[in-house]
Length: 253
Image (cartoon, rainbow, N blue to C red; front, top):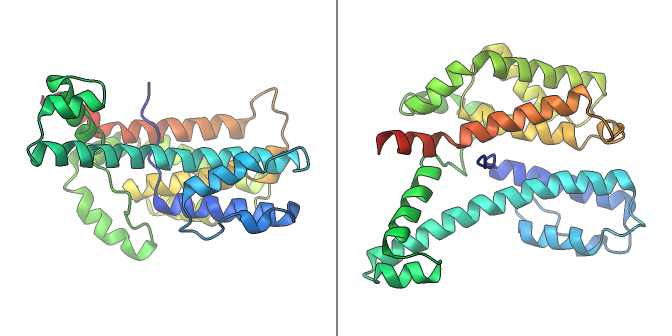
């Protein structure tokens, strides 16, 4: 199974704000129950969507909620991995028996060590708070020099990434997407030919803008359109990028 695309905190904040804006338009009865700030707990937002998504909510809103809800759920998946690694290592470092810790997660002593190794590999290049503002790009260029696997991957996939970036801009234009802040940022990265790990974060933010645009949600769901294929291609690339840590660790073992 492919690794899930990593989700930046900015993607979480954007998803929460989009959900709140949509619900403000269509749900007067339960609107006050929805956390609407960018730093809201994703779990509370997901609980709201599960509880207040009845037949009185327009279909396009429910569809967009699913897309943003999956983004929030993916964030929580990565957070769970970070949290689990912290406590497994803390237990080992604080002198608990490995077999005792392993029993709580359903593995033996060696299984626990393997689990820690896998989580460390998965999170090797994890940067959940990485800055993506344009002013911070210079430091990113310096940082990537210390990440040969990321740099090599971005170089190898350059043409494919540029094609996806161009496609995002074209689809945003075609469907007259109004909220396209990150699509425009992605276009700038492509035009400047400066692809970094931050670009992969922005790719996720731009994908969310397309995926939840009303005009795209209104497309016939019985067959894929070019925009759907493009979105799937972008998520596949983000999943491949997220797997770099695991692959690098396996190669060096």
